Amino acid sequence: MVLKERGLVITKGITKALLIALYGGAVISVALTFPNIGVLYREFKKKQWEDARRRGIFGTTIKRLEKQSLVSWGEVDGQTRLLLTESGKKKVLQFAIDDLQIKKPNKWDGLWRLIIFDIPEDKRLAREIFRRKLRDLEFTLLQKSVFVSRYPCKDEIDFLRHILEIAPFVHYVVAKEISGVEKW
Image (tube, rainbow, N blue to C red; front, side, top):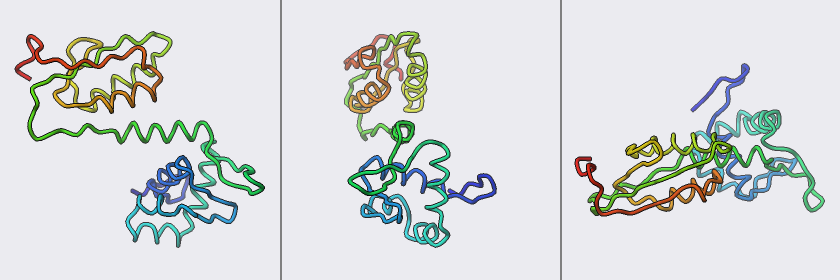
C-alpha cells in the first residue's frame, strides 16, 4: 500500500517491516547494511522490495521514524546502529495486536469459550482496546464484560492479556453449555 505523507510517497509495508525487523534483532548500521535482510524481504513481494530499494525509501522511512521517536541511533559494541525506542516497541506490539486472528476449525467441538473480565478504571485504555479486539475477533457479547466464542482462542487471549498488562483481570473459561446461547 502506498501512502502520500508530506509530499513523499511512502510504502506503508516498509515501515512495518523495518520496525518488526528491529524488534526481531536485525542490525541496521549507519551504512544501512541489512544483515538480517530476510526478515524484511518476507514482508514484501520481490517487485515491491526492488522498487523501495531503488527509490531510496529506506532512508526516508528511517528519517520519518526518527521524527516520530520510534527509532534512534545509538552505539552498540563500538558501532552506530539503529535502535528501536520504547515507543517503537509499543508500535510493533500494536502491529501484533492488529494482525491477531483466531483460527476457525471446520467443525465446532461443541465447547464455548467465555472471556470474563473486570479491568479497573486506571487501565481504562487497555480495557477498551481489549474489548474492541474481542469484537474484531467476532466474539459475541453476552454481558458487558463477558464475551463468548465457539473457537479455541486461549493463546490469543493470553497474548492480549499479557501485552495489555491486564492478565490478573481477565479469565478464560471453557464451558459445555450456556443457557440461552445454543442458538448462536
